[in-house]
Image (cartoon, rainbow, N blue to C red; front, side, top):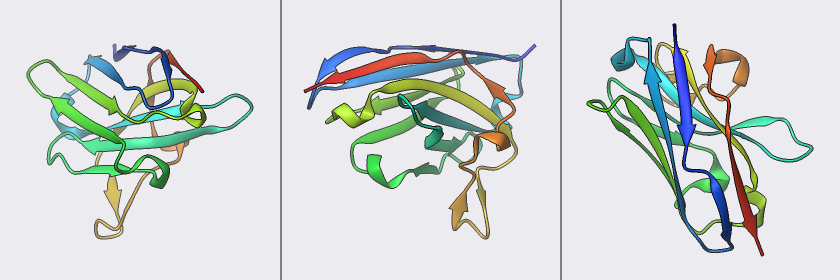
Length: 131
């Protein structure tokens, strides 16, 4: 049984930092694409970042580039999302998810961002950024 458990959400002020962690079990961790998504109030779920656990290359949505960093710990079977310089627009429920296969396609020029591509999901963790 595949399980993803997120932790690390909370409330911070603008400019603050949080680190989210996703622990994975029940899947061959080394050969999947791990993604972080978020759902802001009144908005669709959107991809934030993803990393190919076998080769480690990350992808980010434009609005978080330079502020967020996705990383993996193969020994702990976790994927973390370090979020710095948080803004009120980052307020959302954050989810980790797994897609079987590679994150990247088109010769490495794009990564899979549609939630429908990801098969397994955690329950989410709330991040609130106040101004």
